[in-house]
Length: 215
Image (cartoon, rainbow, N blue to C red; front, side, top):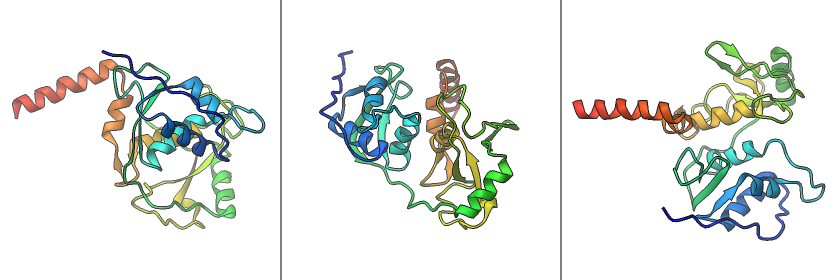
């Protein structure tokens, strides 16, 4: 398999937001392999030189909120861990503009959660507290408001109703965005399979092969 072309950092990316800087970098390197180190360099604040802790969340937003197909080793075998590739400038359809809770509504959500992430999986609550170090994702926990129901189903949930919202840490914001299709409000099964390990992928392959062979 021939080596893929490598991305280059073309000057300084001075856009105000991390996401805009990363978007510009990937569009400058369509079809080329970008490394984690390059992404960190581009994401770094052009004025202070500070390295952001939430670059992976901004990268996820390019996929989910802006519809870019940014691939990783989970998507193709010729990429290594920590390598990413924007296949083309074409963007998929995404959900509409998101609303946010009011300041008072968010205060009530944070009070209810005890300033902790409310993500629940297998009846286990994440519980990471605002300002703590995330032992898995790294970086300082910054809680963000999230629609309890997928955005596409209820895009205009009441910004004054705390029952419509939950507090999520950056890592679980990424997990939810990756696993829920914001354009349909349904589970993104394809993304779930992508995130599975190689042995689980083999089990899924054997199951599907058996399923279709028996059909």
